[in-house]
Length: 164
Image 1 (cartoon, rainbow, N blue to C red):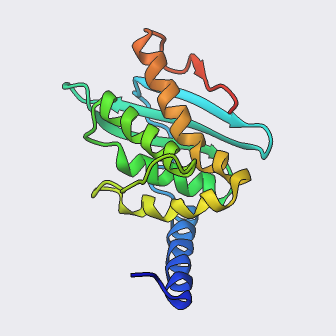
Image 2 (image 1 turned 120 degrees about the horizontal axis):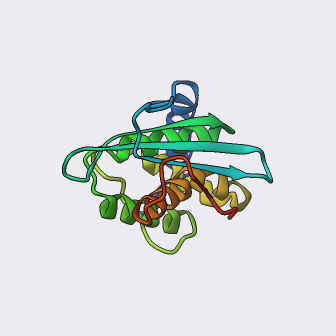
């Protein structure tokens, strides 16, 4: 069954509303004072920059993830949504979700948002604007790099992401 033009417009409007809600009222914005995982990422082409903070529970799962920084609506919304998706996930689960999300924006795999972060589906439309994909993936790339640095034994705050 194919969608009609009106259904597609309604869906796009809904996604826009979700993005702007996360941009205007980002979730989990701010520093985590006792974060074990910290990394900073920049997109020098547009000026977006984020720092990701992660606190792990005793079992090695994310207890809390937050972000700080400045960015466009897509970067801020994506950062907000990413922080909602991570609590309760192991480092491996977080890496897998981040990888799947990045692949979805590159049209490599279909993506289904996890139940705890259904708003992530709203970012699927970004792939129609290739220049904005880096805005949407900055927080996710930064989180993956933070996890890699944590595993390598670097202290929180020592890492910075590579430019994509």
